[in-house]
Length: 479
Image (cartoon, one colour):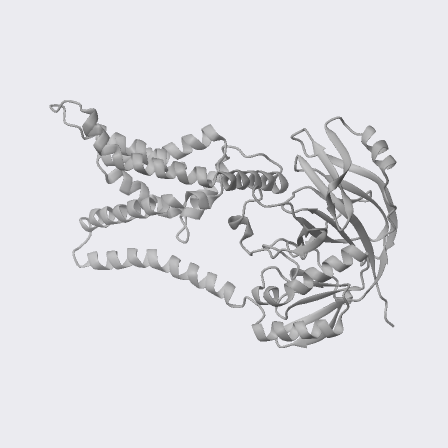
């Protein structure tokens, strides 16, 4: 969106500078010159209108991402962010690539230099006006222009240096500069290849064998944990994983937790999504129960104790709602029910992210190796959630099996919905029907007595919750 206005203004600048004074101005002639850009502008406008919902969804997602991970709103950016964009565009050579780019820009004539300057400056001006910088990949369109200017700068630089060195040294100089360009690229791509060569994923045969094993050796209320990034395991096991998640949630029964992953993947990273860090699982808790090919199956060596949770009636909702701010309303929604139970709907009118405490508290002793498995249903793509909070310090819950337990209700029955690996780029949450997502988190307790309370964090204007429940996982001490 920033490139097209810059390109149009740069083209108009070239037409203006290249005009002939002796020729009278003609709107017809100017229209013929600008006709390709007018057609492109119309097509681009139509394209943006066609994907308008997805654009709004993407912007809202990016805003929420900034709030969640950087505790800031979108802005015109800081010098550090502009430097990060420059570093990404200069890969794999590094920031020194801009030396020949600047020299190539200086070597152009006035008209050409003005064209490129407008092409580079207008997007920055539009960023300041819109207050939305965007990620580095959004400016990849500048890369061909940088490479073109860098090539021109190197050619002019070699020509300049050739006049000041002996003739026999010209070829050596050319080869040396060529190697200076090729070698960093070679090492960068080699390093990238070596880092991905040992990427560990299951084969189809291994995943089918694992499926047969878990069907025979686990119960319907066993939580099966697999990686979202392992395509073969997802293809084979995901329906069973989602089914067990639904069984646990509906029946409020957890028999155990089984992790399945490649031997080369640390067990703590099996539940990681998109490289997010997870809490380290103590080795003493993870018992290896089977090896199938290069896959390893672990079972958490824990005892499961349900957290007692009293049913919340209408009177409780009324009393709780009276004590809250007028900017937040809480009520039961019978229409958006899940598994026959009405949902808890929370509406907010403020742009802030309120944290709402509930009166539910737990006192749980721990030796430092206990965990809480907490689960609830929320609207699919909802940023708002429920977290556990300790008076002795912040807890660090991390999701497991995220995006696996997505269901829509059809005549009162839950129907599982498969989540595409690139769902963030394929579907608009503004178009899809109402869906529920089962959200499971694992939280490690601190050593000593943990005073645990519950908080709702409201990122969305309207949030839905259902069936909140939890389980304490205490390690089994074996003699």
